[in-house]
Length: 552
Image 1 (cartoon, rainbow, N blue to C red):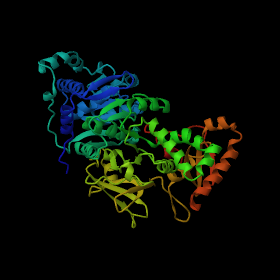
Image 2: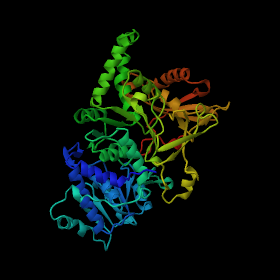
Image 3: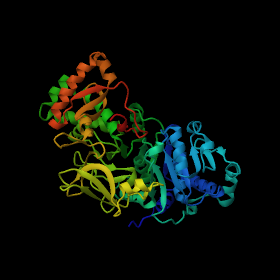
């Protein structure tokens, strides 16, 4: 059991780091110190109190990453209420369903999203407030939230007559097993699962992040992943703020050009990213470079190849600001070809494993100890793992985890909870993998997506797709079973086609070449019988995962 407490960690951090920079908005170049941030939190606490919000009440939050968004999140949990962060990519019907299902009492939303929401359909909400300017958007009859908001400055000055200082920071004593956050894994009305995350679940992630040195006092972070997602939330916000780090919020879509520019300015000490970021850099920047005839020849010459790889590594490090200790890749499966290349050139990256149900971290290894194609070691002293296999080190089985980070269950969904949490506290992840003796976990694919060949071999379509996605003219792909044969659905890379003068009429012939090349790289039972071209991008969830069930 953890001796640390999430709320007390933040109380201490804000006191100890009072004068240090805390949050910056990359777009308007404003910065809050930890003292400013704590003062804003105190104002929010006063608003909650005057609006009749009690400990355990739910507060919904939807909008882009801004200092205001972060303030509402931290103010809610340090007050003792329960935060319900909602991805702004959820469609309005799904967002409304989550707000109602979570029984939220207050809603904080950006105005652009508010315009799409039907306030009359929000059953438990007392009032909605703007994240953009903190003004009242709407309130239910009989409520006085607008009145409280109007008089907030006067009430704050009355309470803190001499001003608000670090010795005024006193947060409530709330047990670690108390519900602190409900994070929805899906917005789809029929499949909504609100992951109940406790103070201990968050604390397990914080303790690991702080003890491992991932976040430390004065370190710089560039936050560009959605903070409503557990991965970005934990390591681009929660852990840095617990350590006294300086977080810069990008607050816009992280296109490669914008990201490189922001990295150069912020010079982050830790980079948290999803595989897609590195995969795009590899396909758009590195592959064209090493495919040139002269460079291919040079890479075949001993000793000369190391010098070339060193130059590529230097360019990549500079692209990420040049001062980071490591890049942590997580949130989705990493393309094996890209991973092998980055490992070969000694780029300082590592791959972690987690899920929303673990708030999110399950495993991580520092880049200097990283084992290629693994997802790091199970967090020592915080999590434990077992594989449902007769030979866990060699034969994949379902990954089950247990420990401090595992959720309470799904909110108002006992059946779904019972399906993944067994009586002994083991969370059945639905991922297939192996576990080495030292605790290193390697993931093969999802249990639900695993296919069975005619001769009884297990096929993990993600592994085939990873190879296929690296091939010319392939933008993204999906491997499905059609009457016992493997068929690859491919959305073409039209940009590559245009640059090489390939017409749509010529594409089927090129795909035959792609199929032949792919089938040389996979096992006989993994060979593709056919490639079908799909004219549009695959439909995805707000978290950018392909909705596989639509294409089976």
